[in-house]
Image 1 (tube, rainbow, N blue to C red):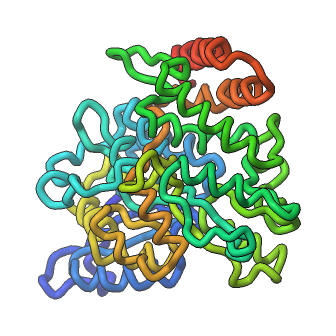
Image 2 (spheres, rainbow, N blue to C red):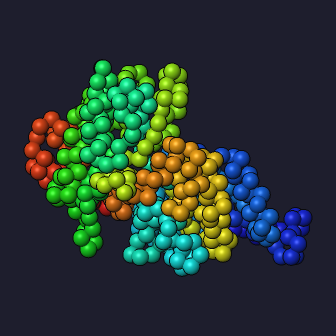
Length: 409
C-alpha cells in the first residue's frame, strides 16, 4: 500500500511535497519488462509525487494471496491488483474491493468496454473490476488445405462453416479437429442462441443447459464435431490440439491465436500457411460469441491512498497504455473502439472482432465448484455418443445447480 517516504532520502518532488509509493501487483506474463519499465518512467514523470512499486505475482496460489491482502492492513500490501476477469466476483463477495463505478462512468468510457471483461467486474450495478486486456478463441486454419479444397473465402456464418468444413474433408484431410469436451467453445454456441450455462434467479443460481436455446447450441456443436476425428471423451488438451494440428492434415481448430506459434514450432513447414478468422455467428453481420479470458484491475478497499491507486488504474486502462500493451503482447484492448490498434496482426484482429461478442462464465464465486468437477464435459460426451440431449442436459443442469449452492471455502 502507499507509504510515505522519509523526506531525507533525497527524492522530493519539485513541488516540495512528500513522495508516496503505489504498490501494484501484476501477474507473470501479462506485460513485458520493457512495457513495465516504459510505463513506470512515464507515470512517475507525470505524477511528481508518486513512485511505482510493481511486483510480479505467480498465478499459482494467487487466489489465497489476494484474499489475504484484501484483509490485511499492512502498509506493504498492494494498492492495485491485476486479477483474472472471472475471479473478480470472489473478491467482491468478500467485501474487500473499492467500488469504482463513479470513475468508470465519468472518466473511463465504460460503455465501450468489452462485455467479457466488464460484466464479471460488475455486481449489483457497481463496477469493481476495470477491464485491462482480453484474449479469446478464433479459428486457426491451413490456407493450403482451403485452397486444395477450392475454398476461396472463410465462412461468415455457422451454416457456411458447416458447409466449408464438410468440403475440407477431402484427400485424407480432417475438416476440423474439435475435441468432444471443449466446453468453452460450446459455451459460445449456447450464448449465440440466447442461452446460458447458468442464470441467477434472484440470488439463487440455477444450471440452464436444458433450455431450448442451450440445446440448440449443443446441437450445432454436435454437427461441427462430427466433421472431424476429435475424441468425444477428452478436452482440447488431451492430447494438445496444437500437436494434432501440426502433425496431420487438419484444416481447422478453435484456439487462441498464440497457439499458432506452438504449431509452427512443432512443424516448421507450416510457416506462412496459417490463417485466422473469428468464430462464425448465426448471421454474417457479426461473429459468434466466444468465451473471453483476460484480466481486470481492482483496488483493495484497505488502500490508504485511493487517489494514487485510481491514477494507476486510469493510466494502465487508458487508451495510450492499453493499446501499447495490446500491441506489445498480442492482446485485445479493453474497448471495442480500440480494435484498430491491432488491425495489422491477422490473428489478433480476428480475436478482437470476436471479443466484441465475448462473454464470461457466470459471475458467481461458486462457479469454481462447477469447474472443479465439470458436469458440462460429461454431458457433452454423453450427447456425442448418442444419449438423449434433453435427458443429459437436465442431469447436467441439476449438477450445476447443486455445485452453485455450495459456498466456496
